[in-house]
Image 1 (cartoon, helix red, strand yellow):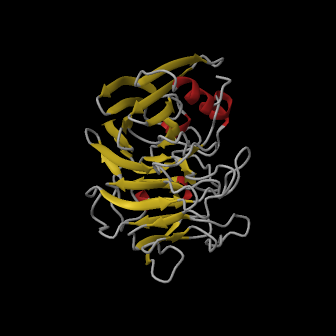
Image 2 (tube, one colour; image 1 turned 90 degrees about the horizontal axis):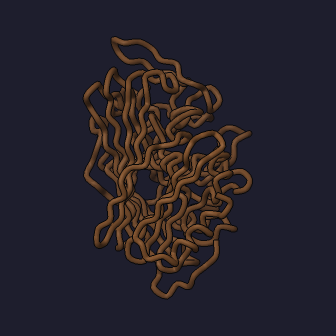
Image 3 (cartoon, rainbow, N blue to C red; image 1 turned 30 degrees about the horizontal axis):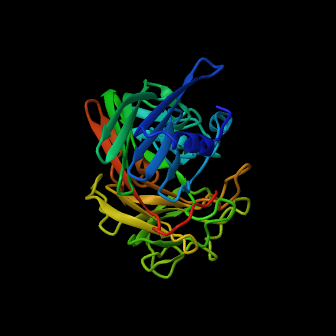
Amino acid sequence: MNASTLDLLTSMSRRKAPTERLTEALPSGETLEWITLRAGSFQAVLCSHGARLLAWQGQDGFNVVVGPQSTAEILADQGAMGVTVGRVCNRIRDAAFDIPGVGRFALPKNDGSHHLHGGPGGFHTRFWETGELIVEADSAQVSFHLESLPGDQAYPGHVKAEVIYTLKADGQLLIQCRAQVITGISPLNMTHHAYWNLGFHDQTVLEHVLQSPCDRYQETDASSIPTGELKRVEATLYDFREARSLGPNLPQAKDPKAPNGYDSFLLRPDFQPTLRSYPLSRLAYVRDPRSQRSLELWTDQAGFQLYTGNYLDRPFFPQQAFCLEASAPIDAVNQPDLPSILVQAGESIEQLSLYRLHVPRCSASVSS
C-alpha cells in the first residue's frame, strides 16, 4: 500500500465495523494482510508480516507505536519494529547451544559473533497466516500462525507458533505468544517487540518516566551478552523502583563503537531460577509528562528487556522510542543457573504481555 499506516487508520476510522481486513498482493508472490481492530474508543492496526503491530491509538487519535508506515518500509525494516520474535528472542552467546544427549547446534551469526532475535530469517521476517477475526461486545481479536520446520535458522525440532492480539475497550492490548514442539526438541523464548513513544514522534523518549519493581538485572559484557551475574539494582542506573526519567543518565556502552542507552534485562522481584512462568504482574509503568499518556506492561514472564532504541536508524533516530520486551532471561539456553527454555516434543509454551494504555480525557489529537 502506498498510503501510510496513519492514512490507513484515518480512512478506516470513518467506517463503523469493529474490524477491517485488507489484502495486498506483492510482486514476490506473497500476500500481505492488514488488520484493523476496534474496541470502544481504541483502535489497533496489525499486519501479517512478522505478526506485527503497526499502530495503536486511543480516543485522542495519537498513535503510540513508532515503526514502519508503508509496505515498502515494512519489508525494509531492520529493527524488528512491532514484530513477534522467535524462536528465541534477544541474544544467544556465540550463536550456539548444546542439548544434553543430542549435540551442539550452531546458529546464524547476525549480531557480531552472536545470534539475535531468532536469526536473519527469524519469525519477525516471515509472512504469518492470519486466523479468524473474533468480535465481542467490548473486544476484538485476531490470531496469526506460523510453522517452523526442523533446520529453520539451524534450530532443531518442528515448531508451530501462534500469536493472538486482543484489543479491549478499556485500553488493554493482550498479546499471547504460543508455540508447540511437534517433533524433536527446541529452545523457545518469544517476545513482542513494539517501539513506543507516548508523546511526540519527532522527539526522544528520554523524558519519559519509568517505574518498575524489578530489583535485579542481568549483567552483560561489551557485546551485550550476559556474564552469568544477576546484579542488584541498588545504586545503579537500573533502579526504577522509584519513578524517574529514562535520561539523562544513560548507561555508557562498554563497546566504544556502540551507542549509549538502555539495552538491559530487568528481573521481576519474585524471580526464581527454577520457574519458567509467573503470576501476571505489572513490571513497568511509563508516563510521558508532556502528553500525560501512560503505558503499563503486565506479564507472566521473568522480566523484560528495556531498550531505548539506541540503534534506530533512518527514517527513525536513536532514542526515538523505547521497548519493553517481556520474556525469559537472555541467553537462558547457555546459562545453567537460569530456567531452561528447551521444550520437548508434545510440549508447548505460552507467554503473555498485556499492555494498558491510558489517555487523558481532555487530551487533544496530536499528530505524530
